[in-house]
Image (cartoon, rainbow, N blue to C red; front, top):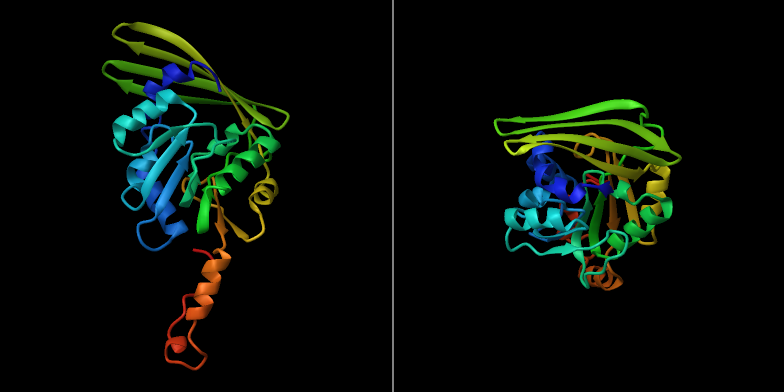
Length: 264
């Protein structure tokens, strides 16, 4: 991202007021499942809107590159640990039951190598038996270049018009977002450029695969953009412990009901 992104952080939640963060958080909880309260790290957490709802189910932390957006998140969710870092190379020194990267933020890893680095970094922060959930950006085939878009905010003392034409250069989507912002102090024009990598489903799945991991893709996901869920297998110690506790065949416990296989 280039341009006035830091300045525009103050208007971010106004521009995305239509987004149902509570419903998306509920859907995410349904998909990742798990027992107990658990821990969750949201990578590219922005102003903390998903964390605001996910903390009802998890002990949450957030990470983002934007200090301005993190400042807003700290006001929204006081007491929640928030880290300023780049998704492509961070180390928090601990692991989580769930790691998320939502609202297509993975696209800001602009090249295939950067996307792979970001996923590897996130995967390193997932506990054995945990899950990594990534909401993708558009695939190269789905991206529609040379299309015109607009978002408007209409409040008594704030008017915003954001207009852009979408382009593509190679495997990168280009969004030059032009803002007209009107307040009682005057009207100003700001510009920010977003360059986001376009990755195929096969490329995303290949980056998520690793020994001991399983990968599933939900086409609908949280908001219609799909959702990848990579699950890490339990540690060898956990498997050995489970095996020692497993009842003998023919015992009453082994004849109880079983949960159906597959992912939710």
